[in-house]
Length: 266
Image 1 (cartoon, rainbow, N blue to C red):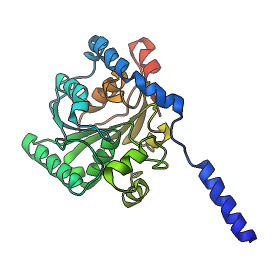
Image 2 (image 1 turned 90 degrees about the vertical axis):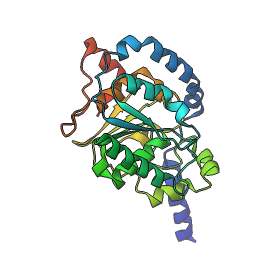
Image 3 (image 1 turned 180 degrees about the horizontal axis):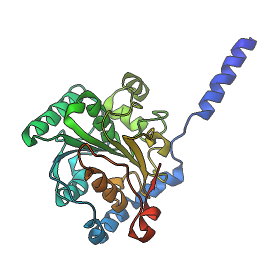
Image 4 (image 1 turned 120 degrees about the horizontal axis):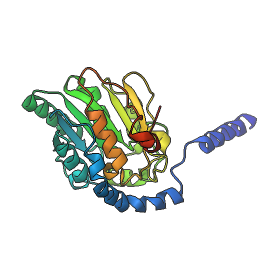
């Protein structure tokens, strides 16, 4: 009886220490996403100063329950900066249903062949999981990985979207997290962009183990607006502009100290 009671106490303590989803206030603040779109429009002169691209292909993945329509602002911005931006072209992202990852890999290989250059992968939220896993499957075709508010660490239920995930995908999020080692860093230059004011994903879930090839950039953004937030857009452009084979970590210096107000790094 004492052993059982001790087991219950350990389980209770473990459950209480488990990372929780963002609170209701942060979730309510997700309503600021339209304002971030407006800010991106107003910030166009500043965003025009973002590093220009070299024409290499970039494949962009949408988040859970969204489609390529939701990444239009991000893709148009990347096209304007000089990249060959591509949508994932699989309709709404309803989770890792049979054949989805295989079609993503086939699309990646096609773009690699057609452009004759490695492909950078940019994923928003759940889309970042696809980007990371594809880079592990086919690193020879991937130049870099950039994720926006992607939950690859900590508890898979430390988000306010895990129930929606299970409804749409018809699968257990805890089981899917066990099947794929989501925490493992891709073997290519990898950047995780996250926000401590994310109202959908607990920010700790998006923190990468920093190394010479992996980094974190914190931006002031909502989860739903991250792909149109001006600070996040600039960070994505800056990361994509890193020369192939000569990747360097993000430098928050410049703009008379403004960058340090907008970005935090490891």
